[in-house]
Length: 268
Image (cartoon, rainbow, N blue to C red):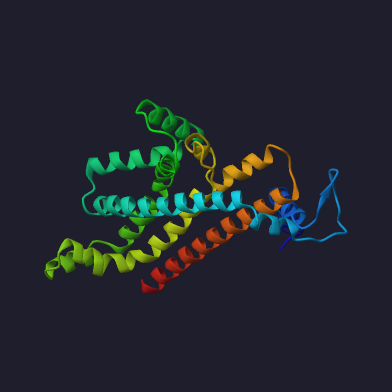
């Protein structure tokens, strides 16, 4: 390797290090500050404490917001898996113009800015006289997350191919038996991965939730309300917990996706 090539590699390494520092240093700082008290806008670096986390677990409002988040997230996961699997199964078997139109309708809310999706849904619900509750929040999250679930399941169905489906039908299996005993075992890793990613997206979604939540708060909305009165140690602790949960779910989904690709490659 010549000195010019080494210089390019060193320069690219420095640029990469600076970029990652700019991106992740604020996140690391927030996590660190959650363990040190803040007094008069100054950090007391000499006092390590987990009191902020203790206060969070004693806060009933936080647990109520967390419960709302889990209800919305799990409902979103179940609904998107059912709808996404049904539409992906139909698109894989039949295709055609109708499937293309359905796919466009699925991807449109995901591609639009969340503020446009949330505002459109808010206007729609107001026009038909539906009050904003956790139900409207769940509907908004379903529309936003469905595209991801649909695409992952459809890609997995295309990888499985139609030959095993045709062989199952030739042996006398019904459509439900073919799906249950032949297709779903191969589809299960994609279902788990898409479920985790769907929950992570629903867990972190804020803009759509702001428009559709009404009086009920999810955890990100509760955090937003706390930030409006100023930053404190308990806010840093809550941000740390949310970041840790989101990263854990994303890493788990990535590991599942990687394992599925390796299994598919070895099978091939």
